[in-house]
Image 1 (tube, rainbow, N blue to C red):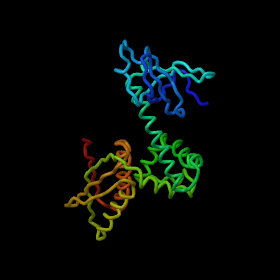
Image 2 (cartoon, rainbow, N blue to C red):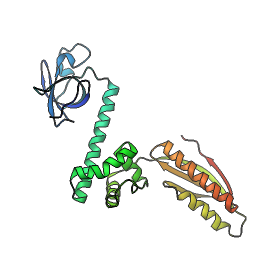
Image 3 (cartoon, rainbow, N blue to C red):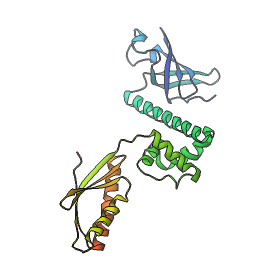
Image 4 (spheres, rainbow, N blue to C red):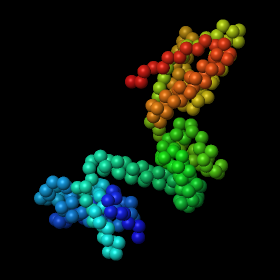
Amino acid sequence: MDLPARDDFVVVKVTQILDYGAFVELLEYKNIRGFVHISNVASSWVKNIRNFVKMNQVRVAKVLNVDTVKGQIDLSFAGVNPMKERQVLTQFKQINREEKLIEILAKMVNKPFNDVWLAVAEPLNQEHGSLYEAFEKIALGYDPSPLLEKEWVAPVKELVDKNIVVSKKELSGGLKISSLSSNGLEDIKQIITEIESFKGCVVIYSGGGTYKVSCAGLTFKDADKTLSSAIVSAEKKAKKIGVSFVFKKEEKN
């Protein structure tokens, strides 16, 4: 039986409340049971346990002791500070969300969950640190084909398109470009095309030879990196073909 180790932090659901403690299910360990004695329910004195613990409540507990022979697990709520609880619950929810997405993908391609996890989740996790973050990047235009076998690229993109909504961070700036060349309009179009070749970047005409350039990313850092790269590349092209190029980034609110 898979059991947690002493001092681990685990996500539990309260299933039974007694005067002397509470029984819980460990949600990450196939719902095996654990027990929180009343002395470990809170850091302060507990007169009525029901004032501190509610039925079906999902919380984070610290493992005090594991008896592998009896399969008995002693836990503590008192040993978990609010910051640690938020951190562990957030990670737990993200893992659950990732597993559900892989379940959906497994049904889409009619293959076992473990096969899909190894083929898709493992390489994306290894490269991006988080499967969900990788999916968000794919939603913004990132191409996963260098990491995945060819057969998985289209299904993964379809999965992301149907299930991932990204809250984008955007940075913008004003661009003034002009050309005295007889082929000036085409030259300017080349500059705009160069900027928009960067994923997440859009150029909108503002009038009077000025344009608004906007680039999006998962974070402001990502957006700033993309915007800077796009502008550097476009400015090099502008110098090469003789186009006047002046860009000023807007301050982030």
